[in-house]
Amino acid sequence: MSNKTKRVLLIVEGADTEVRLFEKFYTLYGKDNVDIISFGGGEIFVFYDKLKMYLETDSLYDLHIDFPLFFKDYTKREFSLNNEDFTDRILVFDFEPHSDKFDSDILIEMMEVFSDSTQKGKLFLNYPMVESFKDMENLDDKDFHKSIRTLEESRDYKKHVGYKSRNNKISDIRKIGVEEGNKLLSIHKEKLDAIISSDIVDQESQYLDLLQKQCDKIKFEQSIWVLNTGILHLLEEYGPLQTSDI
Image (cartoon, rainbow, N blue to C red; front, side):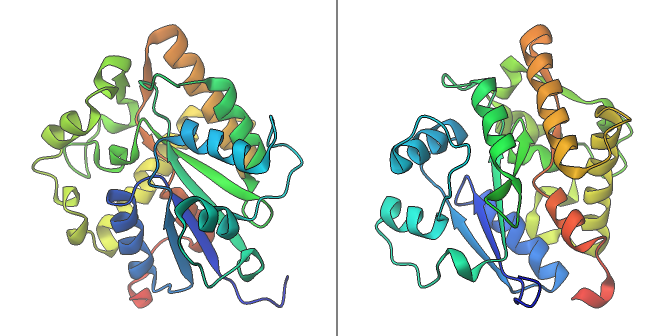
């Protein structure tokens, strides 16, 4: 594996915002070794059910998942690449606390199963949805570090974010440059670090710790912290954006 050329399979929930957002960031990083596949068939709980049905199992633990083959069967599309062509597998989905199918146990299972990008894959959740990357008045919004959304607000989240970010440059993904990209990565990373336990040091545990805290918050307070961890896989993988990347 160490001699294998790095190639990333990025699996995202939606076919629009997620694809455009990550295509933009990967362009800024100057990376062309990424294949983006959109699930396009619903939220993470639907994805979970489809995986179990495909694998004919009640649990995803200890099972090998060939994602290109799964998507080939699921979408009836031909894929020229297979699982062995990828060194890393990244999954980006929404927390969806307003979903009729919401189940914290499923989310925890998914986070535990998909905890290593070089093995089965690594899951990153957006709280409450992918639009959380721009849920701020501007990139200097001092209130973002403590911003939350209620369960009720998450039901019409895109509308709320659209209004709040209406004067924010990053509301138009096409206008995100290196400076804005680095600011976004920094803002969300700082908020993640502020939420998780101070004794959590490894990356795998911090996202599980965050998920457990968000599940408790939605259960007892009917609200969650606004946070986009989907974009943070870029920071983990490549570090801050550099002008020389483009």
